[in-house]
Image 1 (cartoon, rainbow, N blue to C red):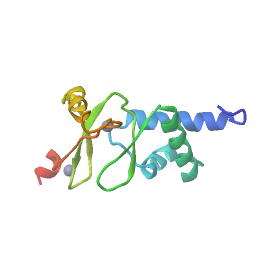
Image 2 (tube, helix red, strand yellow):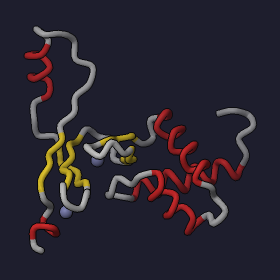
Image 3 (cartoon, protein in one colour):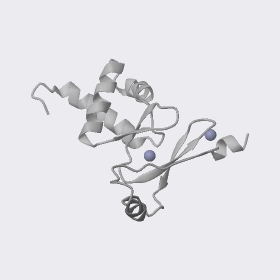
Image 4 (cartoon, protein in one colour):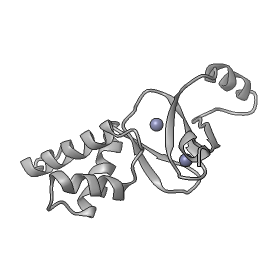
Length: 130
Ligand SMILES: [Zn+2]
Ligand SMILES: [Zn+2]
């Protein structure tokens, strides 16, 4: 951490980290900003962006992107998959069920695998009931 990090910076980062960790909604930076302002009324959107970037760099949270191309933040660090509702945009976590090791082995005849992404899309229960 740079020596210029003030106590205020540390507090802001902690609040942002807690918001993302406790959210199951995979919030966007704007959503984190809205939530953060309830605890830190003077925080700016720029500060939220900067801290989210730092937290991703540190590996404390993950940045995820779905079909809409918007960056969202995920505090759930263990490997998992996502279900995205095409109607309301809700993102729901799913446990990893596929044998990625086997897939990677199969793909090794084609080239070296550096990343893996699986995204399920559909309509969530809340939307299906309407
Ligand atoms: Zn939905
Ligand atoms: Zn997730």
